[in-house]
Amino acid sequence: MDSRDFKGALTIINTAIKNDSLNSELYRKKGNSYYNMDDFVNADVNYTLALNLDSTSVKAIVCKAMLLNKQENNIHATGYIERALKLDPNEASIYVTRGNIYASEGNYIDAKNDFKKAILLDNESFDAYNNLANILAIDDEFEDAVKNYTNALRIKPKNADILIHRGIIKQQINKLDEALADIDLSISINSEIPRAFWYRASIYQEKNDFRKAILDYSSYQKLKPNDWEVYKNRGLCYIQIEKYNEAIKDFNKAIDLDNTQFESFEGRGYSKIILEDYNGACEDYKKAKELGSVMADEAIVLVCEDDISFLCEYKTEHLVSKEYLDYASYNYYDNLQGVILNYEKDYSNITIIISSVSDGFLEEVGVNIGDHMKIYIDNTQKIIDNKMESLCENKLKNFIIKDRKIKFSISEAIMGGRINHGIWHLTYAKAI
Image (cartoon, rainbow, N blue to C red; front, top):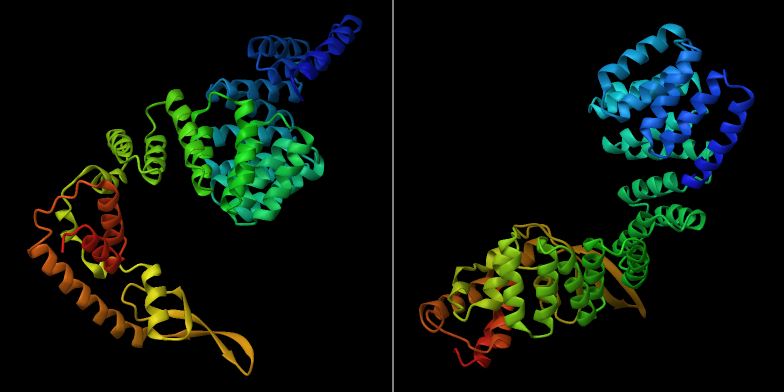
């Protein structure tokens, strides 16, 4: 319900009060309407009137406790809970409200117990299922959280907020298609909830469907145009589809809205590298570092410095990448195409898929080539290490490269473990 619904309810309740001015329950309901409109002053006035008319009204006492909890006055809220329990220890709403008090204090164990108690007393308590699911999600009990959100939706099947919550949890447990279905349904019910588009975009990002993610971030941006983070996230999506100029526009907007977030400068810096604006990238990465980025140092070395002697600090045993292993497996097996599935640090367990032709059929066979590959890689690394050692003792010691494009290619190759590729670029730069 939005504020117009509660205002309409107030009109109906006020009419009823004119005909029955001593009805405690009408004032409690009037208080609830104000509470749901975040008008806590008038909510308190009406709850107090309800209790003045009937001091034994458990529902009014619970509402008063609920309001006090909302106002962070848990000591007095607990007093009202104790009063309600004396009157009716089997009223589910008492346990829901006390569970909320426990949860607000970080006491999730007692909160869960109270919500479960409420469900035992009333298995149609929407708030009990919903609030229990929220706490279970906080405690990373995702499967149980989904079950309780599902029960809450059984009671209120068109609750867009709960659909979003369940979708978020399903995303956490990698049920991406189910998560999308929940958030799709939520948006069909209410297309004015910004976070629905936000989380759907994040799911599309996880599925590598960056174009759909961009559309959803754009929908979110229309609803919340001053949120810097949506421009940053959309900029990252533009990078993934290689629209670097569009990415830079988004990072510019993110920085205009909040220039204290290093992620925007990192994203813009990366885009500028691709567009070969190395001076601009250098400035962005320096700003990112100033703002706290721990990743900026390597980028600064790559794009800001002319001296490349820092590359001598890199040892190939720490740099062998999956890309290099794929290349090595292809060469090692000569005419067979090998694709690395997994490998461990010491290369003792390397599994590849071998695609080969046998009796006219293409077959894929998983093969552990760890023992043989380790010898091959060790020998290859020795050759590369010797090349790098020779370079570092001689040519690279004080070698300066003014052409940032060439320098970047060399640094990126060597720092990424593609040593031979880096050495080729050094040859092109006339360093060797």
